[in-house]
Length: 579
Image 1 (cartoon, one colour):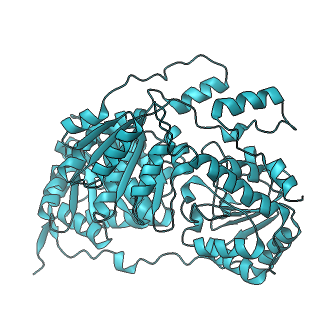
Image 2 (cartoon, rainbow, N blue to C red):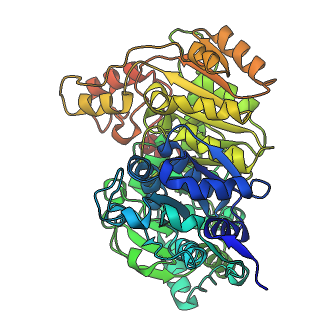
């Protein structure tokens, strides 16, 4: 005789089959049947109670970005469902699989304008790759099984809406999920004729460059081998940070506003680009329109989207870079390569020159020095949006074992703290950081309570400059008055202490060092609120450094403002290298 089980319990068993260990959310009346299932399955499914559904969805996105596997979140009918959207859009934009379970009023109350009843499917249509309402109790485990398959297939968000009463209904406990049948897609092999065409372009280029996106995960050593053999500098997108270690000599950083000086200058001067596994949207601003362009991607819809393409290779990034490296003849160091390396070293020397600066309010360099010194070899950095993203990209020295994520394409403030919760829930023994500005931190700081409740030893660093600095800079660039960007100060260290965490408020270099020393011995979450200068991060996308090609007075003003006396323009470095 077949045993019976509540449909909601059967559904949670499907999540477990797929390797989902955590689910983030906040209960509501319409979600009672699933909460009962989570209680029943508490030995095998870890429920993390957040204090806002947006945090739950961002925690799931943050977990998925670190693991590459599906993560789960939930919200109840009405406001709980609406609150999920921001975090779900982050997952959708950055192409990670997330399952969202959404409560609904009982079936008998649907379509009666009942309390908290909403027509939820249209609301999730844009954010999802799968969006269904369960119609019978018997189909509940099947629908969730299908949702997870679709989330994996399309690397996106799957939404399943569950009427409250269906979860309580007993069904036969005989559903077998498809989890054991799942296989990762077989990545396409590169066409070797196209590989040879790409090699020909790179061989004949004067200023070749490889630009690496997150599609190249797992190919870091292969990219370095390519760079060493062909002597080609490397750029990475923000989402690909860490694939190639930041301290590798030929890693120029990235181009854009969230970028580095050598990254921007190298991108703009390149005459041939090998674009590997990325859909970087800002290419028209940094890649010359007449540059030769080789694009490698597993999604043919992305080929030619951002730039004209001379050679398109529909293939796996790792397999392609291996093939190019194997088939290409070694190339000697060129003045271009030597100038790129000199540019990288000059940039590093300039950045590190401020690491022990004791001026107050503090610069950001001493803060990131403390972070880098304290970080473990497998640390996870969850970084918020704004000036903190610029600084995180520039100053965090990530390697291939560490992980860096941010809200890349969607760019939602308030990302870091929830994403850190997701990372720590999945990796309780790894060191996890959330790094935020005061604007982003204030949006989600209530969920320090979540970190406290579950004894998560997350190190939360808040860079307080009393401004939405990223937007302030945009207003400066468009010559408009500052409007809506000023923030009042708060003692986030004291606030964190009141919430049950260890809190420190830092004004001086000595206080900074002391706070980090104490944080090393933390038992639970720590919040280090550092009062920093509102000095704009040097805008590498609009450098004014070269008196031979730019107005000398403007150069002098720019250099003075950003203390950039020791920065050398790429043109001069190319001349020095003999080009």
